[in-house]
Image (cartoon, rainbow, N blue to C red; front, side, top):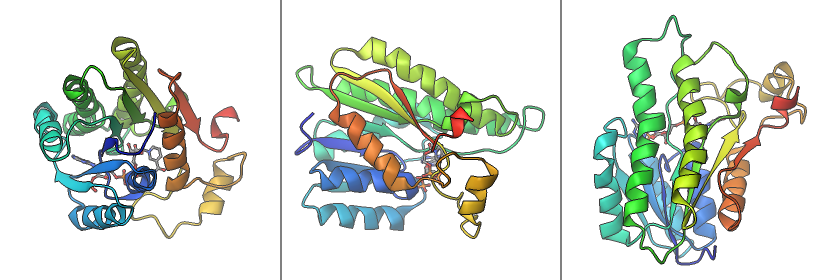
Length: 245
Ligand SMILES: NC(=O)c1ccc[n+]([C@@H]2O[C@H](COP(=O)([O-])OP(=O)(O)OC[C@H]3O[C@@H](n4cnc5c(N)ncnc54)[C@H](OP(=O)(O)O)[C@@H]3O)[C@@H](O)[C@H]2O)c1
């Protein structure tokens, strides 16, 4: 795909991984629709950084818990910026708790934001894409789901399902739209845990490459996937080798 002049919608584009993805897209000349929920100030900064790259950039507030109304978000982007060529499903929540300790509310909140909103966004994205244009979707999953564990019960289920949804939509939307996923390992501390010694975390988790990743590494890999035209239904683990030990 030729990047310059295309338009991308990035959910959760105001902070952390989403912010890095928006930055990488803008640097390649992609116009960016920056979705946010609560991080308005951060989204404004990301918009200004993108404008400095001489691309079009707009911010869009939307609470993805209300996933069945997400068509409105896509319509708003379409009206302000034209057809969307690239969709990055990055927004997500990370609810704690094992199966026995997770509440119905936490399960609903996880599924609404992490799984159902990407589903409805993909439907709306496919519907607005003109038939003569190529579309690209990248879903942000999690490398942790390739092992079975009891923590973050609802989150793990949503990300496992998002991986399967990636492959299912890759089949259904071919050949016009490719659908792939990135599955990050630990890229940065959780919000509020920035004080932790990340070298010690990498050692404790026995990450073979001996360090955690960074948002920029995920952004680079997203850009790589977007540059590929013969790749669909792939899920790329970016985890410093954590899954092989
Ligand atoms: N960070 C990592 O090391 C890591 C590792 C594995 C997977 N991932 C995945 O990578 C993605 C980004 O993670 P992150 O750590 O950068 O972000 P994060 O700290 O988990 O922030 C969540 C993002 O999702 C958005 N969001 C949450 N609830 C929302 C809602 N109800 N409606 C709309 N947007 C909502 C937030 O928007 P606002 O701030 O605007 O509210 C924010 O941009 C997630 O899907 C996560 O599961 C991250």
